[in-house]
Image (cartoon, rainbow over all chains, first blue to last red; front, side):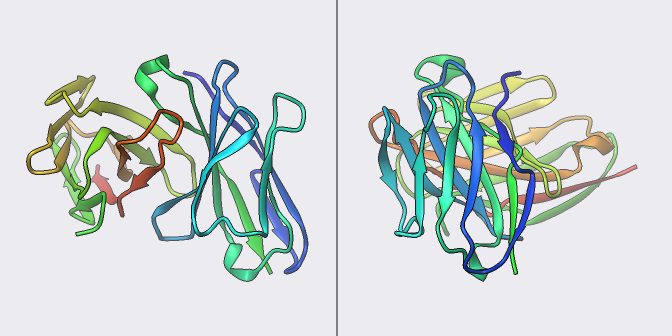
Length: 115
Length: 114
């Protein structure tokens, strides 16, 4: 089974600090996503990324958030100045056209706690 | 109901019984996917069914899709204790490939009693 790898698995940060969450997509996948899940709530779409640019973003993905693929392998989500309400599990997901029937694979998640 | 809403919200059954979970959605879709999530863990992909398919099987899983009713069901046969988890459906709206903004349901919390 192909695997999306995320680090860190858990991070605790002070409110106002910057956080970077990292994802290593499946090697032949071309489309990347970030989702988040606040404890006990639905999984929500944040952003999709293809060809080094954002394809679509949700209203949650405001100016505090950014994504990039700095080295051609990692895919990162940066939260510039964290707020208490950013506490959530953040999932990276990847897919490639025609691969596994366009199945979208998710990582194990990065649990972010803002205090 | 909301896009991708599952029912029941919680289901407890004896080991060995079958478990059925339902999902309803509102807008037209390309495909529908079911995921499993163990508590505090990642989303594990179970099965994808395309909008032109009506039924799909994978091991002990059977998924049906009725696009006229905008609903899907996930059946787990001969349940095991290890099947205890939350199950989510996620729909992929009609869009150009690469913009699969999956919309997740609220999930069904399945508990298998040994």
